[in-house]
Length: 245
Image 1 (cartoon, rainbow, N blue to C red):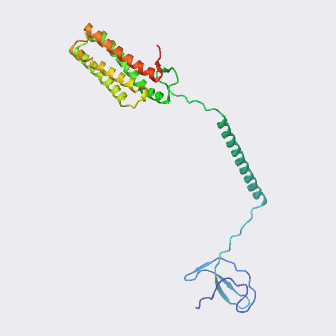
Image 2 (cartoon, rainbow, N blue to C red; image 1 turned 60 degrees about the vertical axis):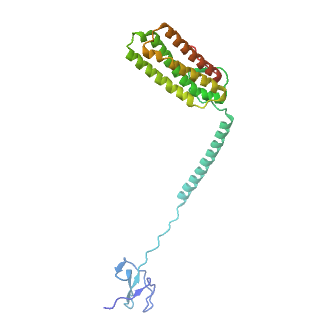
Image 3 (cartoon, one colour; image 1 turned 180 degrees about the horizontal axis):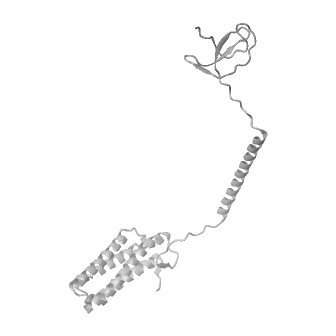
């Protein structure tokens, strides 16, 4: 059986008799080695053939007038929003430029500024004052214990209490030594550090049981007062004074 001839596309007239042909109908059939094909035949002469199937191009439907109106209104709304946004942004920039800057809240040390110190001294105070306050509090607590309770405390506990105080004070002193201080206050900080170290050195007799001796109590009390005076001198240079209780 001879295969049907294959046309490249559906024919509108018969190739054998020339009679016009109706548009093809039906569905595609797959033929191995050929592909999808459709079939035609001529009712006048009986000729038959097949043609390569071609999918009909998708019909492009134009949007109706109502959809075009929706798109138009949406575009107008977008433009309006952009214009409003630009205006609002410009006004906010003008307000921010005209409005004076508001000071931001910040934590202050337990001291009150007396005058307007320089920026360098203010920054230095933020390092010095917390360390000096901690040292002053620990020193006062230790002196109260030393003059009131040390004589009735076993020597091992006296030594342990003194060791703990000396270690904490020494760490605070090292912190002050390692910090770069402005020229205006560097000498006063050095004097305070030297006085604080001398006070710690004067605690040596405590380890030998002399905490209650009147002469020693007088000496160590004077050394503590000297540390307080050196601390006050630094605060004076920094432009700060201790708050009164």
